[in-house]
Image 1 (cartoon, helix red, strand yellow):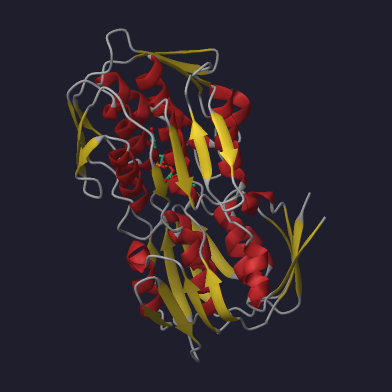
Image 2 (cartoon, protein in one colour):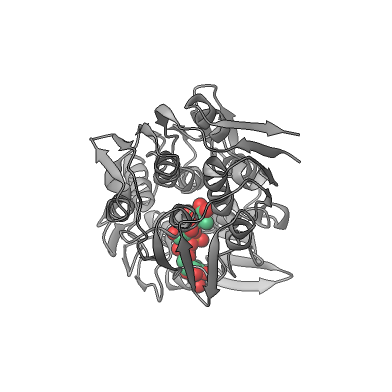
Length: 418
Ligand code: EPU
């Protein structure tokens, strides 16, 4: 199993380029199931979750060609196997994104019920309720959800009880091929939802309101092939920015859309960081002191839960007390005991972590528990005194493309060891 060895306390310099968004690529790949024509997606990051999703589409019968330039060509001329098997779903919850497209395209979809996950229960009841509103008949048996569409999908009003990102995406894809108009209310407003709407529109779908909490989709009878460039990964951008700030460096995070992580930038400024944004880049500069600020995760445009662990790492080296409240997932503090091993002073009370800083972090042997928790440990190790060994970096590989190379190129002492 791969590990990272990180020797802390190096300052970074130069540029840190951002890859294409993992969480935008996943629904975009699922959307390729909606047409028999080829779709070419550019700027798809080469990370493990994407490889898993591509494997799933191949299992469904699509032909997949990954090119050296980071683009992927997918042609789902025929769907031979409209199923997401347990082996794939258990490694990646986002595989439930094929539920809507498969049901819409073939009239039947079988998706393994996702089990628990290290960050929370992660049910898909809202995807299912939504599909039922569009006329699907859904049964659960032997650990699988089976959706059939006896009379074709029909547009309807769907009000999400709770905001769900992949649920909104799943329903938007199903509704694109339904008969009539679907209105999604209390929809997710994340940039990834907007990116998917842009792709679907290029494929011939009629969608308005993506990026607001009310999305209207007028179904069409068929969609066609197209080409699309995935948006930059806002979570990677945020992680790299925090790396620059924690190491007190002058670096520029490039190839990103700062408007997609405005709530992070505002918190960083409140904490005293010097961040300057331009159209597609953000520069950070050294400061003498960072101060603690409170932060609460929320749906977009609020502070992203996917940046909570990284922000907490920053708070461990800031002066004062910070209350970090996690509202989206019930178990997303797995990084806390590991950060504590490195000398952080953090107490958990229910959904809140109370961070007292600044702590003088020291290198230690720590364990990655999930994707974003791993990122927070990398950040802590970059400023810790001495050497850290991060075990189970396969979690990091799920969603960060060449992270150790990017950081090393900017001057960090980080290497992958077997
Ligand atoms: N929820 C339900 N029922 C559902 C769906 C969701 O109760 O049917 C609950 C969840 O348990 C959670 C909340 O609603 O408490 C929000 O979950 P959401 O459905 O929005 O999460 P998701 O779509 O499964 C996506 C990202 C996650 C990110 C969340 C929140 C993708 C592929 N994944 O997950 O990304 O944390 O939205 O922003 O887009 C990551 O990249 O590390 C990651 C976990």
